[in-house]
Image (cartoon, rainbow, N blue to C red; front, side):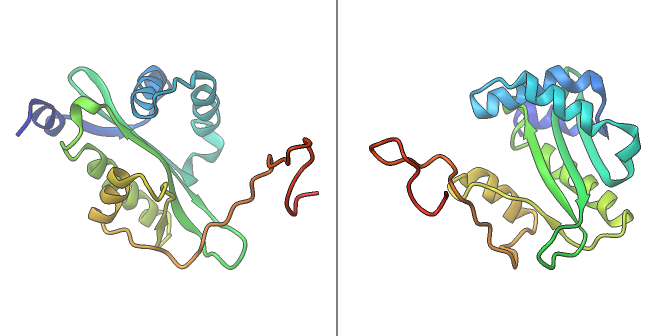
Length: 168
């Protein structure tokens, strides 16, 4: 067992707090290679709003050195025939604590809370070439769902600077 995995086992899952903001920004920047403080400030401001807390799950795993991982999810009901379900939309672990089951512990608690909220399904989206994250979700029981994600690039332009394709 690595030192990080051993330290992660001694950590506690708890509700996300405003004081976790700096750690979330740091961990996200380590994962993505880009610091996004304004984005995370807005997420924390909106996400920790007490008026909507019963449909949201914000978790942190706190170790001896502070926050070592976080997960954000929300119960959502969508159009196109989707039933109300839990959505995991952000999860990350400090690289020093990866492979210590940090994310699995956070996901397990998130799923427990989603079930308490009355939903029976959890969804997320992952880049198809992000093998580590895909492997994590698959190892935790996720499979391809019944919906197909579609997207439209709103920025395509031709050589003259005119929009190309079907977008007017």
